[in-house]
View 1: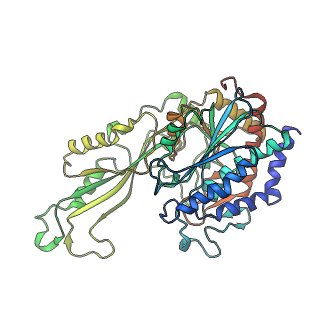
View 2 (view 1 turned 60 degrees about the horizontal axis):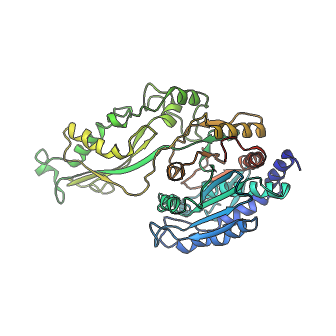
Length: 465
């Protein structure tokens, strides 16, 4: 069996409908990590869907409760398949949890936990994020094993069930089992391709930190006629405070939030990427850092957003000055930003602008560190060459994803070079109603990953152990 034949065997999983059947089974698990009633289903996904599949191809698997939040956090599966300790070892990762199904918001004919096929689209909650992604990688490993009889390398796997609530316990698991999970490189899949027709690689992600800005001046509301002009309005103060964080086009004004890591090599890598195009929205050229291209803003710079804000009762306003106002805010940040100084720097900035009454309240969930690997790293060049050999075209190579992932658990805790090869696309409605994957992307991803695993078993890069 040749490399090309193995690749076509993997692609046939889509052509025959077998991948669709497997994905339908996995989507049927209501693995909503945001749902406190879903604990049993989170365990069942690992024990019934994942563990038997891995054990059938020689993995030794163990299930673990969440070390950070045993009662509310999702469990973990750790698996390993060791052919020879002297061979290179790949660590891979996936998450089987999903966000709320939001069944009442899907269009007619669709329901979140039943996979529905329409043309080139497969609809279902978790289909894109992340069930099809780790399914494709497992199928690629199975294909190489079936056709060659061995992988030619060792594989370790981490499956978590809490990614959608900020991956509590993942860093602790990596620390507790760092010897068990020792490897040469992380190769995993999550997120979207930049273009459905071209493979994408990214080697890290922007970090993310959320926080509340609160202006709490007094108890209760007071009549706007009797007290207007006499009582400070917390909504106005909060709006003014928010306005000092960026200018009117969203350019960040907090000095410590402006990174110094958009270096010439990173700009060169980003210059090779295509324009960012969405199905329902278009990039607004007059928003964000004026001196940067849209691609540089998304992958090489920080962005600040107000996710929600409230004062009074917006759905039923009354003629009264509210006593408080609150805004949930978020900073997405790249390497080169001191994560530990993000909120202290904001505090100093607000104080310097006279907003001592605005509280900065940390949000302790959904915090991710920023990570990045050089596009010139030997593993990056190796994976890039393999993907090009399979598809005949150069993949898009990102130093980091614009979104956030728990990549720091692998890059910082385990000290691994990290490479992600995503199997979705930008229009997949991830985290929204009508989530879906594209069959052509799935088919291409099966080919790409089978070719990559075939190559690693023949000639891993010199940097491998």
